[in-house]
Length: 340
Image (cartoon, rainbow, N blue to C red; front, side, top):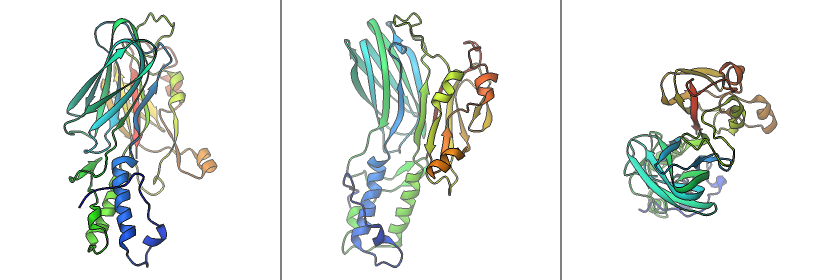
């Protein structure tokens, strides 16, 4: 009773699974394979994506300095390997730490010279939380280490899937035993119920829409003449707004999560049409409601939303993020948003 799938899967004919048609083993088996594929590989996208202008994310000290941190969702309790891809140059090392209640770490040794692509895999022994953090620390052996970009995703699962069930955002996914869906195998109502439950679980998998971190402890006297962004400024807000098509939002209630890392709290901020007060330093995770962009909905005939901090008068001017804030004032040093 293997929980197998082909990649890409062979989809069933939609006309073969409508009401009134005879139940055949072929379409049912293909639906099972498609569910297994969608769980293991189909919904795996970037959870972190960020790039910097050359020289702005740089480090010359010979001891590890924490430079960036992101908040990210898990793909499931069976996706326990995070693949990280970094483009950097210089001689030194980058230490990555993944924290989901349990931690995993990896060190990337930089070989110097021109920019290279480096990869690392961080493997968690188990999951204690749905959301966690990835921290990047950098040190130089000589000269200066410069990080150009970073991308991370949960490693896809291969066929067959494990025999155990998984959890996606608290909802159980049970892999489909393809051997039990073939010709001359009895089909019970349990099969249909499990398929519907698995579809509901897959709908709850979070997609990252925004992942941004300021650069802390970087070289202030940068030879390239560029200063790193140490906190979110008014000029950054509009560049971080993402027009997003959110599926099922017209029929199902959706929860959009926003995680903001704050220093010198409390701090007020407008997010998707509402003002929130962030009361504690470190990561603040809030759920926000959807703000429909009617102009884009009319243009694309889809539920389009502006995901990000609002380009409101308060955020741009009243908050002081337009240039009047200093390091001792309340500031945001990272913001990440995700939803289904």
